[in-house]
Length: 476
Image (cartoon, rainbow, N blue to C red):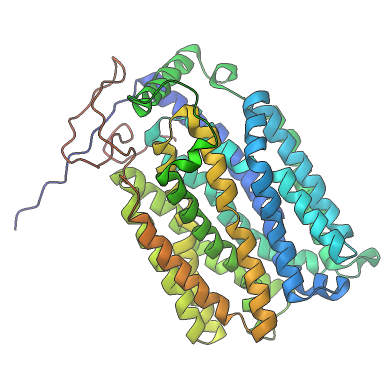
């Protein structure tokens, strides 16, 4: 039986200087953002591990705890777009440094919570401090990397959240066992030490991050020029025949595709944060486990998710078709949560591994779609809008779970809801136009040094990494 030749994928051979610049970015910038996201996500979700001690000391019901966990996302949604506008004004270096240090200070202050009102206030302030971080990084990639490399960069960046969910369990479990040291509770030590790490990291960010390609002294002049030419040429292609005027931030809400993006990302966050905040409680249902053992077991689903994030990012960059991969991941996540409802706690842990494998990689794959849909004039506000409103799913998920647990004494009803959300999101992805790196076929030549292979199939990827199809430059 003869082999069927694979469909031809358009290839752009970037000049050597551009390839060299990309390798340097993957060595210097991408790892820095990865570590920042580890700290960011740790301060955001460590609350789930402090749940039992915090509720006992402060006197919080499950519903009150869920509301406090979710109120972070209300502040995040309110302040995300203004924060991203300030980032455009002050530059990524100053603004991301500000975000890191202020959220670290608020995260540290969580150690001094003494009432439900203070708990709500600090969670709200944490959302204010952190707002703008994620879309700023996504926008940063759009101005520093060619389209063919953003999927992998975004996946590596978002592996930071997966890494955080893996290490936050054992670390937080160990810190919780410091209970009573110098007269302080374990949850107080956990918040203080983990928040302080973010403050220190903020000063590291200021030392190593650059706002734009032109300020990067670690790139040669040839690398800077080549990178700017390629990225600007891709922007011209995305702009196409659109009007050159500045895109109104509010008119973005009138775009049906943008509304679809908002709903899909909202659904992804409902699923993801419900699992994140309530996984320690679900694992604790196994019984007979210490705080440290619960932390270790909660790391297992996220270890699986880290592998899934990297593999799915590589596959999506290789074939350039994001929609089918995203649909598959959401269906897998829904099946995992559904299975967890009907099995024992130990088997349920395995089912939640399946859920994490589906829901965690869905976010980075999703973000490659609006990145390609939006041109640079609308990229910063558009990404911020999707992220801020979509992140309200992080408010709905823990709040709903807390209400359900108070009403039923079980988290199974919440898991059923997650199943429905996952399947609805998968169906919604099918309505998104395109699914490759761009939503329509581009044929215009971008630069003189670029060699383009004709596109054989509409909707397939427009570019792939230099070298053999789907492979990354050496050392990236």
